Image (cartoon, rainbow, N blue to C red; front, side, top):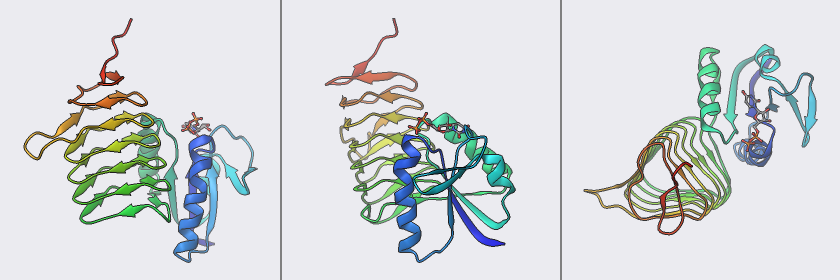
Length: 219
Ligand code: UDP
């Protein structure tokens, strides 16, 4: 029986980009273990980028003492659904950090995070479960980030910003620094469009775009 096995859940764009990060982490830590893709679109086992790819049911049936899974799917609602299923099945969420990601002082980060290459998380930062920070994103000092938050590549999250659960921040968005007494807040489930320059708090559930970012009205 394999003592520990590892998997990247999702074999589409997000998963295939995070697999090398996961593989390098195991190499860095000197862990010799099987590393699978899980994807529910697969009926039968396949090979994807050199790794065995199987559906969740097949993965669940594999014999191992401990199973560790990184959920590499950008949609945060799907991440939450899968995380709940993994918890029911007693399978651990796995955090993966790129070799060249930078983590400074006093960071609390929930399980199941994916920190892509060139991500920096500076000091005094609290982050919830299953955070995704894609290529070149940063989180500056004194930020509080909820569960299932997603940063596309190149997000500039400056100091004293609070981001609530399930918010999605698009590629290259810039969020203005808040202050200790008045943090800038991105509300639950809000979407910040790519390239947006966010200068003030964003209410829950809305989409903001542009510079300065404004609420996109639904037509
Ligand atoms: N997927 C899955 N189980 C689910 C939902 C999604 O295995 O319950 C897989 C789906 O088959 C697809 C991937 O997750 O291969 C999501 O890929 P998509 O291209 O939608 O997004 P991304 O890779 O950017 O997250």
